[in-house]
Image (cartoon, rainbow, N blue to C red):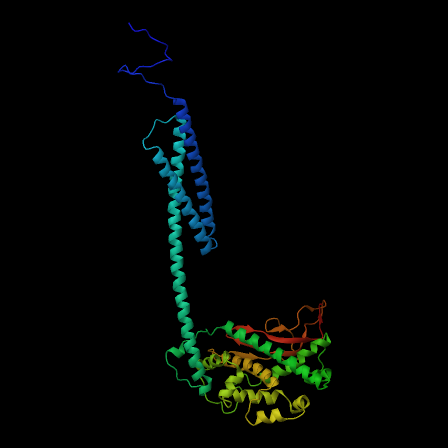
Length: 422
């Protein structure tokens, strides 16, 4: 009979071979630590993926291609890390092992995170598709812009060659009828604002030259429009604006603009053609190509009307410039070039007014008229009206008003005998 020893000392298997006990608890602890580390890394990865996904959403509102690309790369990086964790786990655990209740709970959470991950992957693909569509759309729009610029360049070249400088010929092919600038009321409004600014810009050197020549500016302002009560002495500059306006807009209601030898009827399209032909050019360049064009005759007549002989004589000490203009020339002096900028802006406004169908109507406001907010705009703001006082009266019109269909562009006026807040 074989004597049994202590249980701790030895263990025999069925074949009577000795089997030494294994440190089961230690192996299980190592596996659990490894599992905990793996799960921790997975949760960290999922958190990073959530943050990247939120960043990708924010990059779409507003749409920012650079931010979208950065966020998209971050999402892909996190997905790649998660895939690496998956492969690492499978390599270390090729066969399933019996799971404890705690392991089952963790595996359930992992499965939930994986399902959430699949949702993120779908959304990422959707965003990538949207980005691709936007990029395609941007490329298509850029091509359209390039084509439009090319057509515009060709049109401007032809307009310079055959426009106003070809005696307003109405013959045009299909491409010449394409205008890169649309004829709209806002275009006319912008041109009217530019004309008013040009009047104000030319009055500055005119006043300075009058000062230098020893003119009495107060007397000159009263001579332009007597009995106007100015709130401040500096406001008398508007008298000179009014003087320039009255002479430059004389004949504006006529198709010929009071230019001799310009009686031929011109179509709306031809007027717009002329507007485009001169709009982007230096007025002196236009005149150097054809000094006797309709535009050249307009500049000549308006200069002689605006600059009085006595005024010019006091400015320059002689009449050489005036005589040169009267003989058909266009001098390159600074004063005449400043005038040409003014003349060009008024000319373009007239060409534009007759481009509309029906044409734009011009209206003036007489001195002494009651101020109307509908048809007039005060050039000086912050009017102060005493309670029970009469409505203000117009002292000067410094820019006429216009009617485009039923729309009104207000005339600019200076109100006489009113108070203005500081």
